[in-house]
Length: 554
Image (tube, rainbow, N blue to C red; front, side, top):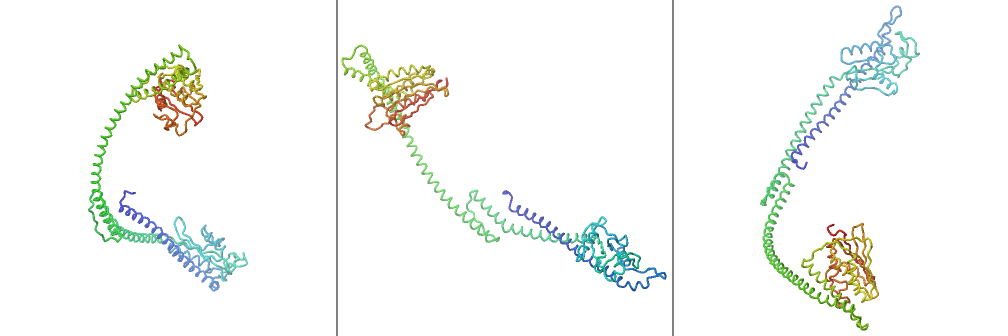
């Protein structure tokens, strides 16, 4: 509907209005003409019945005079009776016109006066209601549509000689009296009027009315259509043409006023103002675009210079980071050699000679424990530098986690003994062999166990447990301690590099802050995860989950 022109819509509306109006006028005219025809026929039937009734009354009132000359010498009545005269006049009227006139009654003296179904209904109505003066209807009679009219015949005083009391007595005509009284219904005058002429007249009148009304309606609607075209659609077409010019970029549009209406002129004035405003806005916009374009060009030049500077700075940072990693790797490697020798000579000294006293024994333990702690830190720095340099690769092999646990215990046990901490290692008997990097898993467990010992006070416990979880196909490595614990706010950042939960300048615990970061990196390289459960002051539990078949499921 939105794509149909306004003229087309109004034309369709006008056609619909014409059709509806013609149908309504035809129905109204037909009904009105039919009602008018029925009223005319009723009046004609009433006049005819009154005339017939007048003839009947005349004959009844002059019956005495007719009877004086109506007997033979033998006393037999051969005169003109009122019933005979009325019936004869009706038959004569019927034969000389298209109307049918009858006198009907229940149980008539003449069989020809027997009523049909319609006349019987009329007689019933007259007998039931003494005030009923007529009965009429347009109905079918002998296969044709006719107007039927019946009026009651009231018994008068002159009628009682032949139809009065006593009932059954023979009257002058030789018929038994009916026993009627004055005012009784003695029958009815029935008139049948054909409708042919009236129907033709009605149809002609309806056609004339419809033609006249339709012509007037068409003329009015055509005038309305022309007025609508001139007053509405033509000005709207001009506005549409102006809008199309604006759409093509021609903002120099000005519509002239029309003679259609003040509303249309107001609309065109507002359209012209809008076009002028758009032209001004477009001019300002072009100027602003030029300014913005120049500003963007300048900004792009600045950004390009900054990008070049950032690339240069990034290059320097990469070089410095590489130098740092290489320096740390070199230093760590150089420091590991003497530390390893110190630890080896300390172990050799402990095996080959007993300390002279307790002080010497304590000195030996301090040397070994501090050397191992320093070695762990140096190993962390060396591993992180290798990781940054991208020189760390996964060396997958079949690993027995029991061997790793034994090596970790050998390194961590002296640290635990030095602090008076109970260190335990538990491995479930059903733990399978895993596909992993032996050295990296060992490094993960050494870091976790070393941290647990470092942050657990004297008299505490550290426990390493390894269990198999077939429901998820993983081996869980747990390190639990009874140490100082980790606050909730610190648990998410402790796996970042160079971060410790205690980061104050006067912290009590030494360390690089790389151990947990390396543990997280190595666990993820194996396709696993690492998590912590801890409460400040109540110890911590670190859990590493490693797939049995390695990160690629092999």
